[in-house]
Amino acid sequence: MKKVEAIIKPFKLEEVKDALGDIGIEGMTVTEVKGFGRQKGHTEIYRGSEYTVDFLPKIKLELVLPDSQVEAAVSAIVKSAKTGKIGDGKIFVSPVEQAVRIRTEEKGDSAV
Amino acid sequence: MKKLFLSLSLLAVLFSPISAVRAADAPAPERSVSERLEDLEAYVNNGARNASTNAPSKIAGSGPGHNAWMMTSAALVLFMTLPGLALFYGGLVRKKNILSVLAQCLGIAGLVTILWYLVGYSLVFAGGSPYLGGLKFALLKGVDANPNTDYAAWVSQNVYSMYQMMFAIITPALIIGAIAERMKFSAILLFVTLWMFVVYFPLAHMVWGVDGLMNGVWNGDAKIKAIDFAGGTVVHMSSGWSALILCLILGKRRGHGKEPMQPHSMVMCMIGTGMLWVGWYGFNAGSAVAADGIAANAFMTTTLAAAVGAFVWAMAEFLFRGKPSVLGFCSGAVAGLVVITPAAGFVDANGAMIIGVAAGLVPYFAVVKLKQMFGYDDALDTFGVHAVGGTLGALMTGFLATSSVNSNLTDANSYAKANGLFKLVGNGLWMEQVKAIGITLVLAVVGTVVIAYIVKAIIGLRVSEEEESVGLDLAEHGEEGYHGA
Image (cartoon, rainbow over all chains, first blue to last red; front, side):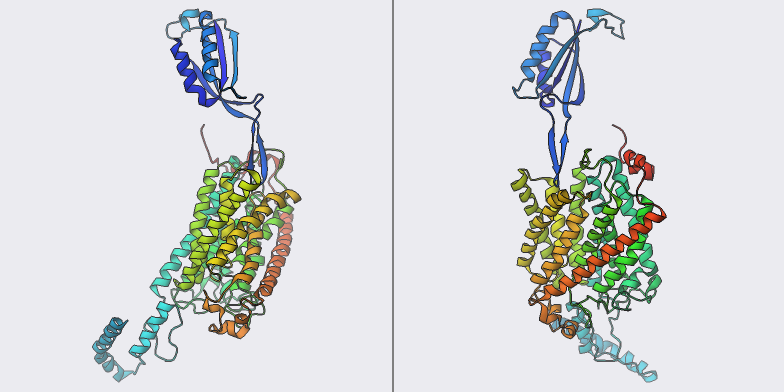
């Protein structure tokens, strides 16, 4: 099992969700987050006072998948979240030791 | 008019037998029909009642139309503070200080009302010296539904006193913009109490009092023949210059220039701006103290200056910064309203347009450049908008006032004739305005320095560092503006 974490632009969420649905992914967790990478923040000016806003709003998607689905999921996210401009986000893949479905107590791949 | 005359004559005929019977006991003087008609005409034209007879006027009290407009205006001016200014300023502070601004506006409204009842109204509007009124109207004694003809022939004095009180409320409330997010609530209350006695009451008497030093329009003995229609000096200059001094003595907010201090709700700020704009019709058009042609002119000039100021300020941002901001539109509207205030009843449409353009540019540079240059923390720009705008307005009134829209500036007004104001209009009036500006500036600055140090010595001006970082809402009022996620 692997966990796929993707930080994407908020307006891309619907597209990414649909693309993942199309390849048969049945669940995900979505969080509104703030952060910055190379895009940095933006400047706001109020009557001549400038403020740099470092943290931009982003969406974090979390999916835990059987190893067999990971590659397809990552490429679906890349394809649907890409605008080609700075600030498109990142995807992290990491191993997951265990998963449990609380209702049935199933474990491992069948739980995700 | 003919119909009215006919029905009045008919009434006179109908009632004459009765009065004839009464007259047998005590011959009470009666106004003739034409004298009664003259009273009615005076009401319609907002003139004085026919004084050529000893018989009492049949309409001795207030005139309903003028009174209705003044009650509406008084409510509109209160609406400027509660909640107009409270939301305008409230939106501009950080989330943790929103309630402190609302509490300060509410606190000032209550406090000033008490002072106004005790002696405030009297010190401003009772006759006294050229510098301060007497105590004739203390505790609002004798201030009833009858007009005080020193100020208005057809408006109840109790309505007039409440109308003027709304000005006395918003003026110190404007100051809190400069000292937002760091001054103790108790210090604000003490400061405002002293400030009303030292700065506002004397200044308002000098400018608007029946025997005021600078009341060019209504005091035949005025030493300084200045004009101020709705409070460019009394309200905006006094609050704005005092605000600058107080924010200098108080010091900057912690983290000023280092931490982000963006407005927490531009939406709230815009709502407040709209309320200020609407309320300002009561402020300016109401300052005619009648529903007459001068009020109508002020209504127009107020609209023009506000709209042009809003547009020009935002366009200046568009030009110099690349983006027109909502705060720019809001600031420009308020600046336009501030600058037109002393001029509203004295200038025509062209004058108002010129004032609107100046209001969009001069305070803009004060706020954007001057503040950066000197680095003072006028948190919400009370100085940049109200002091700079008020001073600009007082001066421009001197150049742009025209008797074509206000016959009180001609020798038809016996006071303007007696003190010579009528000769100055369009011909050196600006010099009188400069004198009024000088007196206002000195009184506001010196008064504020003295009061601020007195308050500092007695209870201190600032909240503690910890309270400031927690936010005044929790620290000073035990409440939060926003709960939940």
